[in-house]
Length: 518
Image (cartoon, rainbow, N blue to C red):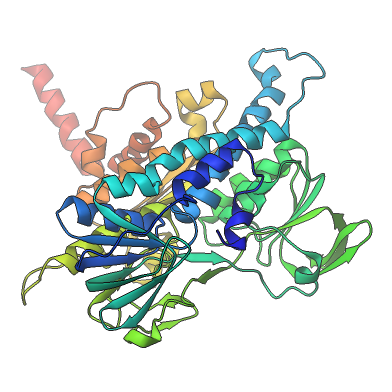
């Protein structure tokens, strides 16, 4: 394995050894190519894995190439380890707040950060079986461990310790993803810093940590570290946190993070870093006030760089830029035989987005679409997302600003969780559901939920939007009581009530009066 691989799987304990045995087995021998492949996939993150396994299940001859760790960012340095850490931080926060529920926790109860991270590594290793080289080989995929690069119009060369191979293909898919990138902050490189690719290798809690960037990654981890007891300084260039989110939603999360002990330095300007004997010094101007703080670690949570280097894109006429590989709405690159999916070409840097795009690649790359026959389009995707802070923020469709930019007239309705019985009983009543409905219709064009389980609750709106159903369908849908998901129906009922006209009510009053006389 490369030096980069080793840095992703520290410490070298039994859990990480199991992880590596699954997703980058040291004794792996690359198979001999079996003629021309229907499709060769470079990159075994979510997009690559889904592309390969679906193609193989349909009977196609498939090759999958990965030079680092199968499972990509999601399994190894993203969704999986972060949610393991977040869950443990929430458990500790619940324990500290137990008195609110009439529970008395003895003084002196402690947490073990090393055990928290060991639990994460254990569960990550367990989950890694699903993405393992051996599993994919059993499913009919020829798995190649090594670096893949295009050398001609239908050839990919694989170089690696598992054996060099030359693969020919009819179609290919670029699924090499993206990596963490750091801003050009003076002194940052010299002082050293963590990213999502290295932070999960920690075994000791930093007493003081600076987090650069208050986007989803920065906020999720800043809150978790603060809950464990780190002094967290969260630096954001814009105002508040999650500047791209619904402002009302982000404000609720921001207040919770402040209660958890995060020190927010937003509207940050002139950030500089200096390595000293006492730690890493961060200086920044926030709202006209200069802050000079000392931290033990710095976590960078901004910036992604597409992995376009070293795969021979120029040799096959695939255009790319700093944002990644250029594709059309069917995910076809400038070379008609080569497609791309996932973070390498998408503005949606989500695992579920990569999954959905992989399925589009399968439909368009492996099946002919004669003139006039519809093809799968990335523009047709209804894309939800969630930031896993507490509370969570989940969204699908348009924000108000998006509708305004497109000249779409909407009606917006908000229902707060402090009027939902289950949220009150759970002590989780800070939040809301907000929907945007196209004027003069019942069509929902966007929704935002702020709640402890917003990521689970947003799917109801995603289904309605994808199916072309609207508020009337949701209003007529029975929701079990008591659940926090009742807020979805309650917010739609606001729309229904608003459209119950006075004229209709007057007619009904006269009708009921007539019925009484009869």
